[in-house]
Image (cartoon, rainbow, N blue to C red; front, side, top):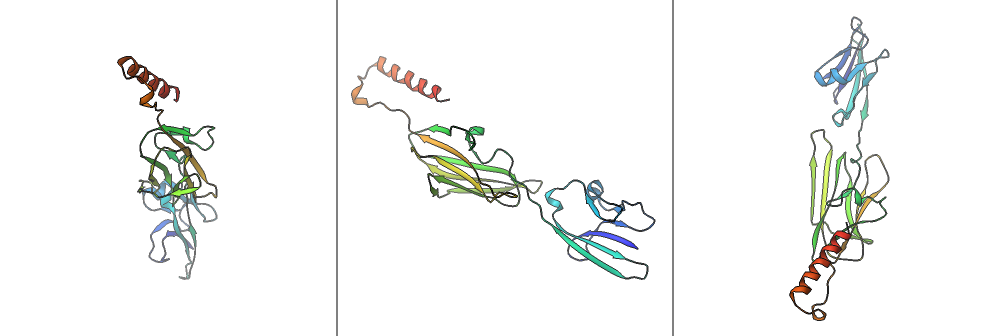
Length: 221
């Protein structure tokens, strides 16, 4: 009897991963460097994959022949997933402060429209990423998905946001291997402004306004 483990869709032509004949060790003979590092047979001729990466996804065929030339085979399909790297999602400039578990949202101050970017990294095979403003979904102005060397992916989306008392929230849903959603929030606030008609315009006043603005920004961090 001979046992062959293959990867592919053709029991005859797909390349061997590990094979065994009675004169071989119980672990069988492997083919190719990566296979020899991570795969072997056990005493029941089952294929053992000791280190699984995205590239190990696919169809595995077990093909058995005997001395009379009779051949049988069966197969199993292996699907893999990888959730994004923690913490996720991340709004650029907020670091870990944007986590949904944080008691306070990340804050940014501006008097104009700005671009907010949200990202997730090292996931597979796919994920849904979008922004909400309150309960309303915001139109994405740019989206990018990149493939990593290990076949995982990175994704980022951008929206335009203006000062508002309502939170902007980035939501990651359809997370691989999970039914949960994760979110990160940011509050886009207006800079503190003082009506010019109530303040005498002189050098001392300008200095006081500048110092007040600096103190306000430092106090918010």
